[in-house]
Image (cartoon, rainbow, N blue to C red):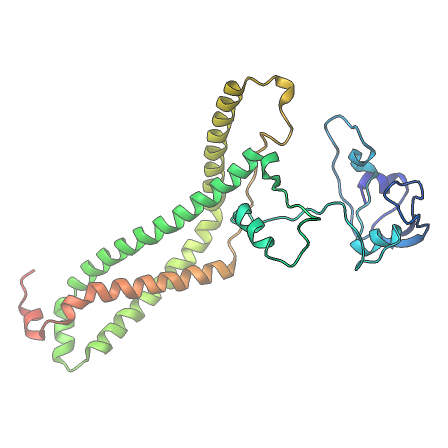
Length: 294
């Protein structure tokens, strides 16, 4: 229920009230005349800033109910209720055309129903979301490739600087597996400390980075929209409220689960880099390692 409607009727969360079917509603084809007691489980807020042409556009008068209650008010049940339309939300990283294509595979009488892509009503918003996901994917791939190359180089230099130590350990009877195991243990200790520091640092820097990316994306979209608007020769009144709407805020959260996934991925990269860096030196004889000139 809307906060203003609840306030004017002295209602709050947990209160109960009755709603009744409207026998004069054109959609009430069964002429249902039932009265249902409902409980307020939450309040919402907001106002329609544009001109109102229909009673449904007065958000202050709206009550949001579950499907079963709405169906019963019109003489139906949840199983046999008839809907004029339904809105389905798609995750931002999903392609709407692919989702619609897959949806048509369901055993539904598609002669009676249509699936309409609504992203055309919010092109700027769609571009903003797609831009965020695109940059996020590129940043992830770029950081993985860059970190892999840097780690390989650093580990190569690190192991190369310890070749005499490796030669001594081999001369003392230690196996190559033992030496590699020692290196892995050292890297795990360093990695745990690095991941811990990175986790806390990311919480402070992620917001600033995401806001900067969002600002740049929205700036590009705005320039593109202005350019398209000038070329289309439409009047100022032709602009729709949602047409040029973009993302204004990003809520960035770093979950423990994400940290675990990144930790596992980085561990794999470290092991691969260690294997590449140590392969050549581990093939050498201990005497060769001890007599190598730096």
